[in-house]
Length: 352
Length: 250
Image (tube, rainbow over all chains, first blue to last red; front, side, top):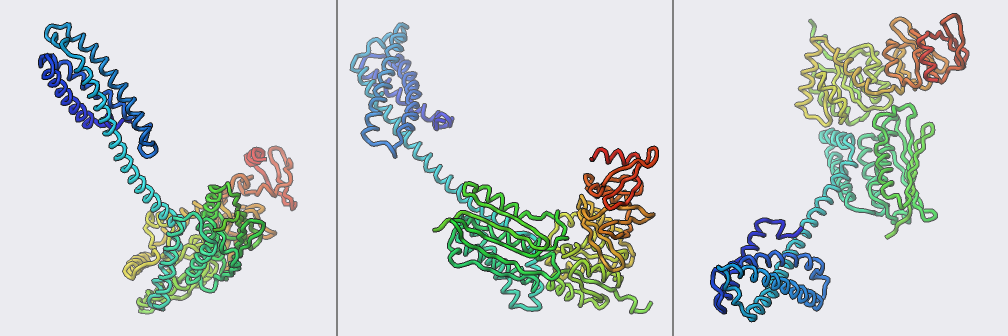
């Protein structure tokens, strides 16, 4: 939408300016020739308003030839042609209007106009058109800078909400409140342990927030996030929760979407270890084979545990995220037999 | 009354050691409360509550083997219960509706005292019917039923519904036939029927619910009376309405 036409105030101001220009033109007609004041105004005012409206069309030309990408010679050429055409058209309309008006007795003096005056009017037309071009370029530049600012702000908000979403999706309220309860228990019994638990939790939350803004992270970082998560849960579950990690250093450099592995570990705890009176060992290993990164999580589980209880929401999320990057042919396989639960993640390899 | 009779016996049920410790710490400041057992899973809780019949139970909801509601379903004894949970939106709503005591982890000393004061009032009045209502509300949400819980003495059996052959009504009890054994449970057949998956379990007779996977064939027994023959040879009566339901399903 045209910025001046869209804003009623700006349009009025713009037309008032042209009306004033019309008065100047009338004065010129009156002083330099023998056109009477009344007739001069009757002719110049509508002519100026009309030209004001005509000049608004320069916005479309300005838009087609943006300052940034168009060379100066091209701009000059384009607008010289455009201004001459507009001005000529205007003069032509002026001639028609003058001849119409001069048939009335009160404006008969219009026929006294000289050809010099017509030339002068044409020159003014070219000048006014170029002025309008300058104004439009100014408006466009202003709008663009506001737009950039708004877009930067929007992106910032988007990034923040991505962080929060990541946190919300990742942080199971059970995990959070139970951890806080452990801290509450430790404060009287073992203050240093309470402090270290607080720090573990803070580190975990901070890292999760950070991952929310990144597209890909090294597997090693995700593994260390998982290790923190396990350490926190070990405070709650004690000896029931054990962890064995066999991820070769070579595999740790490969990039994966963040927070893909942690839900698998959380699932192994909440649907595996948490249902077992004596707990068990969660095994995590990874390897790179034929250009694919394979991550394997295995945990014991109770085949008689209740199933429906909002189970596997974490796995569901992982699967959804893998679908979102489906062009990379990522896969998640889940197997359960008797009392072992296995999740296998297979990703194409990315390296920095 | 002797002062000794005023002691309130309590059982603490939570699978996390630290969570039990917090409770123990708070309970210690009440000389009239005495912990008679601490349990870290649902089976132990059922056993302890059945054998010790405590006045008060601090009950975690999420636990191995049986959750808190399942524990309550399995005990005959009706203690006053204070639920202790970290987060369980659905249960919290039920607690509010039925004005049941609960503690949200982590909880303050003040909050603990409030719950204890309320529980003591309930103990004096001897009213705990709200608990069974809550159990019914929350358990009804778990449909269709996945596993049946049966207690014999202080032993608990968890029977996945797919292992059930059929269920027979016996006065106030139901007899659940699974893996060659019969288990008795105080329950109504009509209530059980409502919570089982209707695509798998059919009320074939006033007295029977059948797992249709076990059905071998149906034979005409007399006019308007049929008999279902199961894969293991068991014969169960089929009513006219039951036969119609079976026909529709098969």
